[in-house]
Image (cartoon, rainbow, N blue to C red; front, top):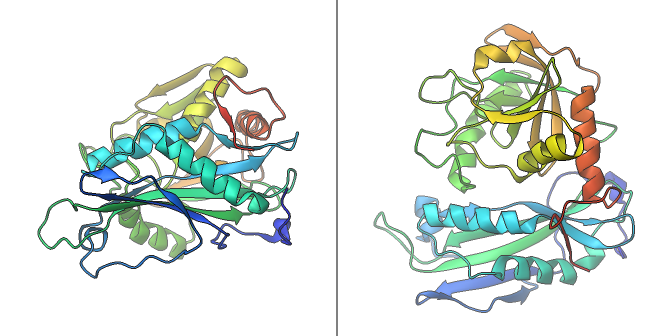
Length: 341
């Protein structure tokens, strides 16, 4: 496996073209059978629905080489469900039952030589997406769509270890109540671009978004859910109908409760509670957990007892357990690991 002549340790988190992508087209009310393609370019009308009205949704997951040499993905059934939930919200036709996982299997097998070896810290990132394809000038859903999956090898998110980051409380809103914050739509991420560029210019790594209605409760960042640890060792995560249901977060909460025997709770979290927590992390596919050492609230700093040098002890246990499951070092709960090859 991993026969490509690549310095896996030097890879960053960026796009590297692999051998094959997957493509399927929706036309005349149905999806075609789909197939692999070596053509990584897309030709679109200048009036395509995706260009005019941002009608696109996407997913993100990874293929890993486990300790025993298998190529696997992590809980792809949840990605399949979330992509269809996202599609339905934007009036995009959902994929047929089983199509998502079938497509992921095909494209990963076809790019098996691009799956980094076990122990390299690198993985094969998989990006499925659907977008409005045909010309649309009036404000309405497209009639034709394309479902594609690209793959790219990516390096470890943290080179040299996970160092805690500093984030700021944003004055911008990420999502409106009853809006699209709970789905993985491209438009949500476009909304976060100006705030994140602004945060970086000000010396911060990320934004903390509060609820748009009252600016009282913690929601998420531009691309990750929050995870907190109380001083009593309880793991808590925000509950809201306008944040994305992160697969990583849901998995970490299960790990906390069922494997590590910790108290774990999903609930509304008031921002004024945050100063009393012992640890904070951002969780998502790319990094699993990014530890947070400090939150800047308009010049007032909230510094967590876990510090700015390394992950807090509970966050570290969660990270090591989940990555151990993904890499085959720890026995996985039933259905979590999907073997590709």
